[in-house]
Picture 1 (cartoon, rainbow, N blue to C red):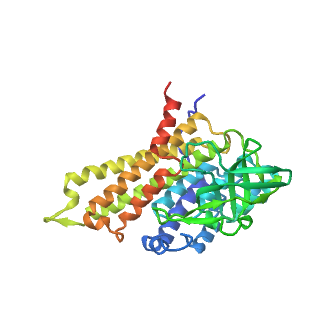
Picture 2: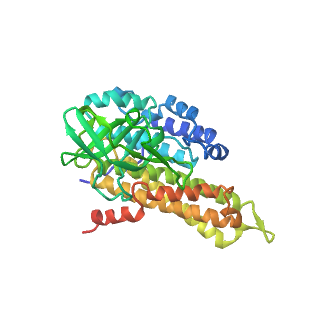
Picture 3: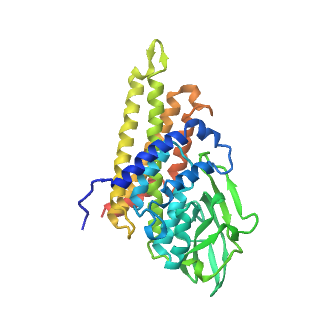
Length: 375
């Protein structure tokens, strides 16, 4: 049966989080602050991260019995959108996805051991990719051995926030069955992390070689057949929310420039050739915002049904394409200056290129939507 209550209704707590997020991000993540962090090792300010922890953001989707706020995954959407609007770089989304993996497939002892730590600001990272295909379902990482003498073999590509992670959730196969493995950063051998330079310099990722890491059976999560599928959908939704916020920021930059730059005695914003694409950005961004909040009304802590999957995939496809268009127009409208590194339009088009491929691009999700929507 399809859900009929589709209104996005904020609770008092969620409204407070959204209001504080807007004020916090605009204060702590100005464009100057963002640029100062581009050459940093971690890509974020540890002091700002600790302030976010103090605000309770790291525990938003974690149940109260594990030190969280128990507001659900949907409550992360407005926060991710606000972070995207201000290009605030932190491991929040990676940690939230790590918590979801443990919530959805961990034992009670695993939840009790790690969810309070994640709520208190420990950084988590999902290590899923064995190749560049988000649509692949084969794990090249394996777990051999038995009992409490298990050894990992294989590596994972482009692990978001892997360099600062305290805990990795690694997809692997064990005795022919898919598993998720909890690996602490201190268990990694020397040289296991290989930092990668990303097109979006506000983000960080690395390849991680887990070969030789030994774990006990207590480190194995037992995911259901749909757990990895659900984690990828949640990742796609949060990335879409972040991209929607960044598209809004790109639009603000465009409008500011069109209403101040004078050419041939006229504001360039008076020319229809610039007006029409700007309106198109607004329409695409509003469509993306509608879709991310629609998905936020449907998603919960339980299994993700087909309606929710459709909403997440539509949101990701729309949001990343809206940001791609907004970033491209921001560069073009600024003329020659827009192609320089010093122009802020570069920050948005780089974020667009990065966000497009996280958890599948628009083509990937529309291909999946065809199976869900068409006979």
